[in-house]
Amino acid sequence: MFDFDAPEGCLKGKKIMVTGAAAGIGRAAAITFAKYGATVLLHGRNEESLNPVYDEIEALGLELPAICPLDLEFAQPEQYEELAALIEQEFGTIDGLLNNASLLGVRSPIQSYDPSLWMKVMQVNVNATFMLTQALLPLMDKDTPSSIVFTSSSVGRKGRAHWGAYAASKFATEGLMETLADELPGISKIRVNSINPGATRTQMRAWAYPGEVPTNNPAPDEIMNAYLYLMSDSSLEINSQKIDAQTK
Ligand code: NDP
Image (tube, rainbow, N blue to C red; front, side, top):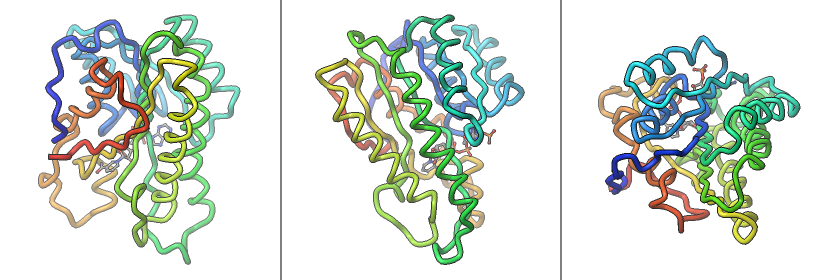
């Protein structure tokens, strides 16, 4: 695993949005960030899917989270602005954004890839990520260290047959990360990096590799070191880096 021993309370006082917080890696990140002291803004497709995560954080006696429902497939720019305005009203600023939500699409050759599914994957994985990041950027105080983390994949760093729109969307995600990471230094203290979680025991992994034995892969809460590192002040000097959560 990524080598980082997170100090207790290292996210205390930080307000961090996690997208796709209802399940899988996003859910684990939200609960982990809360355990290390953060107030977490839980994003998910709808309120119902987020309520159990809210309840779990509340039951642990941690900082109460906020619930931010938005369907990334259909949301328009105005809805991102509305969400940002609500967050600003409630919290003023935020200190972190983990862009984690994604759609796998299908494993298929490009030759036969369904164009409407291609566009759906691009909408959720790339366009929505861009619109949310753009809407939330003004909520990051330029003089306070803040962290934006994008979620990539090994197929976003080296293309592989039959990964179609998902692979292309992850290359685009890395491009968005690098572009933003090059724009912000000098005008703000916001740092921008990406994480490749590596094979992790989630619903998406099961869809991508139906023949795999799930327990051969770590559970989401076992890969959190890299996430804690990038969200905590231990990574203040780290910008435009592509980090592997499961590097030895
Ligand atoms: P999951 O499928 O378990 O979780 C994805 C999350 O994204 C879910 O909470 C899902 O919500 C949300 N989401 C998808 N579509 C929408 C939408 N239209 N609107 C709002 N939310 C949406 O995936 P993982 O936890 O495995 O993946 C997390 C990230 O890690 C992704 O970016 C993925 O590409 C990346 N990754 C994962 C790997 C792995 O092995 N698991 C390997 C490499 C990268 P809902 O449950 O409502 O659909």
